[in-house]
Amino acid sequence: MHVQAKAVTTGSAFADEDGDENTTATSATYRPGAVLGILDILQREGFNLRTATGQRIELGGDFGFTVDPRNSNEDFETATAAAVDILRGEGIDAHLVEVQVRYLTDVAGALRDFVSNVSDQGLLIEDIAVGTPSQAGIPVQITTVRAG
Image 1 (cartoon, rainbow, N blue to C red):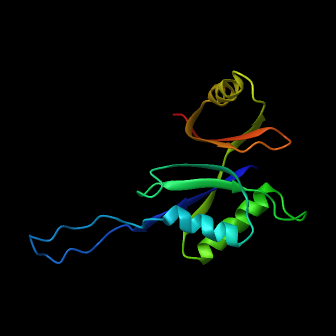
Image 2 (image 1 turned 60 degrees about the horizontal axis):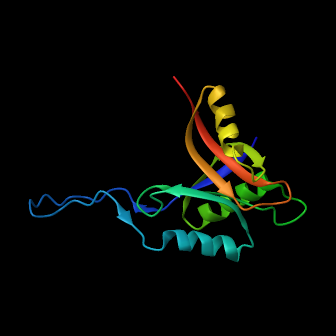
Image 3 (image 1 turned 90 degrees about the vertical axis):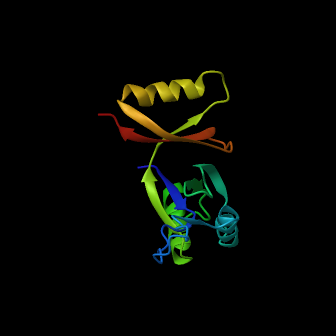
């Protein structure tokens, strides 16, 4: 199994109305610098990001990432799970999702071929994360959902 962490940066989802017609209800509160806060925690705990992705990250979306193992007792999955646990301990809504992973070479068509393989499995692509190169190649993660 390959995993990616997802951290949600919304401060709160709803605000109560007081019944006053002149009061505008707030449906969500966003924290400026929320991603920086997540990155600060990960750095403080000794994590190095290998991949990162996201959409509307500080506007109610999520920040997806994986981290390198911090020692020889960890692999990418256990290190990323440890990062999620630490973020949860800091009050951040974080969880793991399964992803398709390939280490690509830097040649024309490599990503296209990976996407084609995922599509051929009848999967819909929700998100693509491209990481920093390692000895194994360029890590690419695709988050999918089953079609139909």
